[in-house]
Image 1 (cartoon, rainbow, N blue to C red):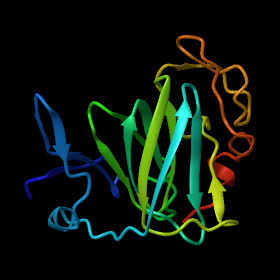
Image 2: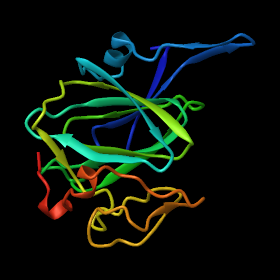
Image 3: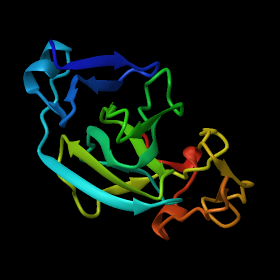
Image 4: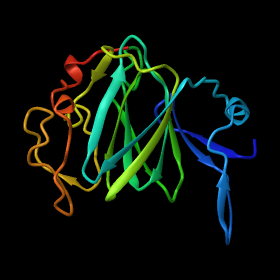
Length: 200
């Protein structure tokens, strides 16, 4: 296995993947995905869909999952900087309700693999961010689930973010350290807390 480094995270089912970057005065080259290298690392997931999004600073997307068609996701940032988070929603897991986060940037080129059974989201810390991810199942309209991004029972420590929990996932009153207001979709401000959320 010469092209990637796979590091298991403290929560089973989460992995940080670092590609080998070959650079010189012209620029760089790297393999962003290799089935062979993944299999050698003990990861045998099969991807069926690639997605890409662009978001501006202060946007928080999440925390999302699909209920009947759970998706494993291999996520990375090709422009900008985000803080990416996964929350364990597997009912029988010893780490149920625990979270893990990693900063993904165009400079560090890290990838984060999130197995099925987790809620996922990210916060944009740069002026804009372009975010790419591979999925192990297709998007299924009507199968969406979500979890409140600021549930105190989970206690995600979003970097550079200040504000007081208002008793819901509402973004009002939250800002980044430079004053940028937090921005969430209406749907993401309506998700329930862990105690009332779907379990896998």
